Length: 255
Image (cartoon, rainbow, N blue to C red; front, top):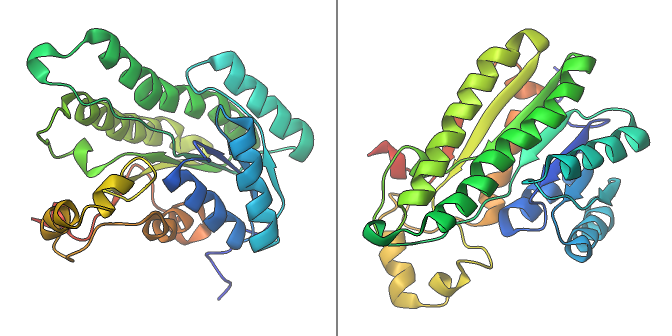
């Protein structure tokens, strides 16, 4: 049997590719043979990730700046990738943000910022890349959800939970609508992952122990823990899988 997890010859775009999870996923795609286009608003950051992919994996990589809340910017990303490589086989939407606010006082401008990036950005990226995949009759998309897409949480996370719930249903709806075009759309649902934005938790033993105690496997996730599920969802190994979310959460959602 052929190696169904290989991505040799595939062109992959990773939005949010300079973030903690996004960088790990971009590297993982490179390690499995894909040519990786890393994208975010920060050109210097994505160039650094692209250079790391080339050095550590030997795969081709390119940094192309884009803003997922700006459709024209995303279209420029798509046009640049198509002009250079001729196709897009994989889209990983790894961008995301959280603004924690008390629900009684939640500023609607913060609510809008969350939805602009997490929801509108996901849909916009899917749309512009999805058209390329439609025309070439095939592709794989992985959106970044969260365990908070199906489980509420305290601490000012109402907005974040709402956006991730929306990402879950965008994923399912697109999977149904685009199945005739051989475009598979799935999602990754992490629990807490230690990234630059959450490093303060890992650096506080008491706080880290509190979060780890809530996870059946007894530890907090790392960006590298997310890679295997995404390689599966982007490869031929999941050729009959669409509309699903894989929760990489140490068993948190099993309870």
